[in-house]
Length: 214
Ligand SMILES: N[C@@H](CCC(=O)N[C@@H](CS)C(=O)NCC(=O)O)C(=O)O
Image (tube, rainbow, N blue to C red; front, top):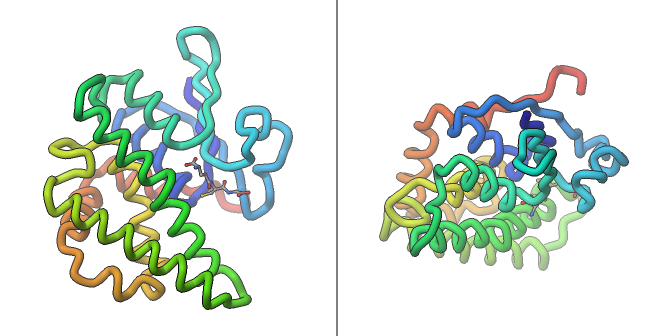
């Protein structure tokens, strides 16, 4: 009923984490972005922005529904199953606020830093500095929030935490060297990461892998 088109990147791992948390059966269709499969017509028909992830819910109320953009997919599934996002009130908007913060800030800045500091063969110091400083600022914002409450939206674990976690794993592994000074003295982020890493559904969602040879 649920087919997720995704790949093994931070954006690609958010929806599997939520699907695992919800205990829903789903199929994964791996879109190898290293081989430009995101530009194939079949994928573009459900994800015209040629980026993973995209979800097709064949059991949606008014017939099959396809959704692209991870924030929209997380919100759709959380609302449909009444979990990990409050239906109304302050708690809903705090979760939406931090979810949008991830989509609009944390993800793009860490993504650009990854490109300039790690993946690009040519090194552009101005770009590396710019994205390192901006990523560092975002880590301070996150530390400040998590020093005040256990989860990003407040008292409860929500889709905002799910959206940020794979990016924070990237920040502390692939980007560890680039972000070294900014990762120091972040006890609240460390506590939050340990808390999420201890959840079996988070571990299963993070572990998605394409079949050998894809
Ligand atoms: N805002 C989008 C970002 C999605 C995104 O950037 N996906 C990347 C992989 S992490 C992608 O598909 N890149 C392929 C490309 O740019 O051609 C979301 O959250 O869904």
